[in-house]
Length: 149
Image (cartoon, rainbow, N blue to C red; front, side, top):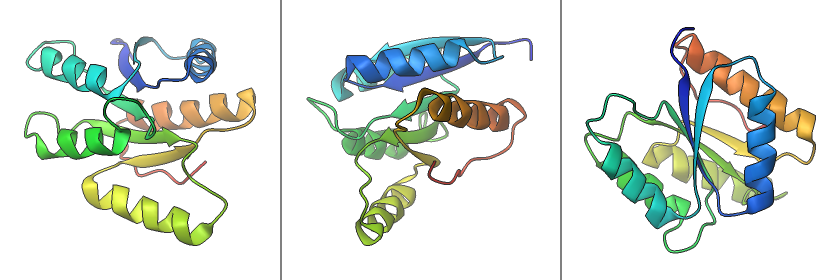
């Protein structure tokens, strides 16, 4: 692939940001990573980038962020004609051990327009493998949805 993938991570936790960035740096993809720290920053970034040549290929979206939640951002993204085609993978620890609650949340987010879901993994290798799977599918133009990892 000649052009780098433009990846946007919306994550307020500094440790999770570093974990994600390190995992991405160890993968065999040419990428440009942009990190925003809250929902308001995310939406400002996306609206500032509308119409620019270098656009975001995929957004990894935490649900629990300050100022504007990931849920609110997802709704706003998918309601905007220029943003709704953006691939959004929910990247969160909001999923619980309750299968009933988890499935209801996934169903709700899918209806809004989420393209995939990742439970924040406990191990670095698991995170790296999950990101690699997602980016491989994106790089060869396969579609997401992805299972919960």
